[in-house]
Amino acid sequence: MAGPIEQFAIKPLIPVEIGGFDLSFTNSSAYMVLTVVAAGTFLLLATRRRELVPGRFQASAELAHEFVAKTLRANAGEEGMRFFPLVFSLFLFILVANLIGMFPYAFTVTSHLIVTFALAMLVFATVTLYGLFRHGARFLKLFVPDGVPLILTPIIVPIEVISYLSRPVSHSVRLFAVMLAGHITLKVFAGFVVSMGELGALGMLGAILPFAMTVALTALELLMAGIQAYVFTMLTCMYLNDALHPGH
Image (cartoon, rainbow, N blue to C red; front, side, top):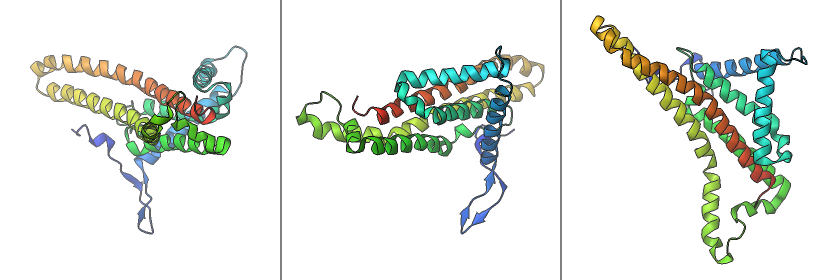
């Protein structure tokens, strides 16, 4: 039986090498494409008819739309709605990727740090560039909190700068670590069930507890798939608020 770490192995499906760089189309790439296609298909089905009394797809899409919009308004104000397409796309991509990863033998793209870091860097770059473009030097007020005595600024400013630069790391590691740890734990308990089941009647009796834990962990992982998409989205909204209202 495959070990709990092998489910995260990146394997080339279409080997491509250009100028010494490995640009192969991998299983990770394939599942990211699948995630985009699945999310796009869901939205197309949901918006196909736009009925007054919504069906299941339309109701689900409207619920997701209002949920993200409410989160964005609560954390970045009405002005933050200009970033709604970005925030909604991130939420839907992470949620669908997490749910796809729950299928047996599926690949979970959000369990790889390079993927979550790329998403976090997209947010970081958007916040920084928009903040500088809109506010210019006033964006630097973000590193001098209101009410800080002038004498303390040589201490506070470096701390705020380091905190700001570390955002992509904390933003990405949180999602990556939760999905990685959850899938490893689930794989370990599922392995116990299979191994003990091969020992005969006594082993099958002993496999009851690991099986119950596997079912419970599966339910927990489904819950975390949604929670982590929400947490990533909420932090994105909070960071966007800094670009819109630095120093507040």
